[in-house]
Length: 379
Ligand SMILES: [Zn+2]
Image (tube, rainbow, N blue to C red; front, top):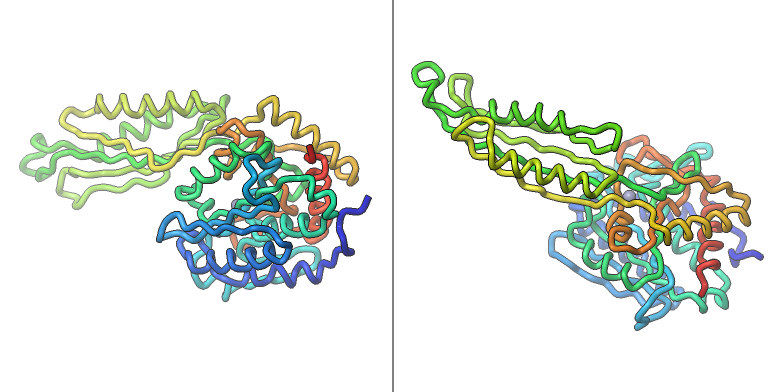
């Protein structure tokens, strides 16, 4: 059975990809994200699909809610892709889409403009009679690269109306899809002491930096490499002068975990430490600025993995799964109890760097794989 209506044309795909790469659309460049939304809107409307545009906040770009089943109470599948990148304004002009040998390069080429485009290719190329039996929801969000602060609630609400969630982030260069992702959280910890002259009144001061130093060591002691609960004090600052006992310091801390329970225990421990500072007179505040739960496959997810493996076999792709250290929107939908898998885009890597690449030979097979998975999800 051939699902692609027309023979796949790489040249046409790259022509469609270029305008999605050659514009600045970092999360903090909402006008660029809106342009990506315009392009995707036009593509889906050309298929006759309904596109609803949400603007969740003024400082972010729009999100798109796209479906072939307007008004449905339940969807068979929800496909997710983000329209933002991590790159600052000026990047697109400096290094637009470039093809070299079997690879393409450019900002967002694999994270995840190709995933957005391949999702559309898969749907537009599917046999319309098959597709008519499947209620599909496509959610394109604007803020994944900073942890989806504005789109998260919407994504979770839509996921709960869906049988499963497939995220089209890139597959790994070696072809693996992603069945599990670590959770993460970011903390800002602030230390308030008491300033004093270091020469004449040292004993009257309370050093925020000394308190911070105790915390750095205490945090490092909580790292458990065996279970994968890790913390990194990534940024510290504090103090105003070499002859002043510092009354302020702060640390920015990254927490990664496989176990949501262990993450909760770490959170409790940090708050306990804040209530019991090492140095008397020091005031410590713990602010968890973002948190993303770990994504671990449930029984339903394992059934979905089996379905994907069977679809892969049909396509001659040996599906293997990876547990990834980084998070994606699949973390949120999986935590909501909806079977979620990730990595349905073409193969690529080097994300968030100038080395980001897309493997051209993987584009067509991965589109066909997604089509075969979708066909198997027809109830
Ligand atoms: Zn991404």
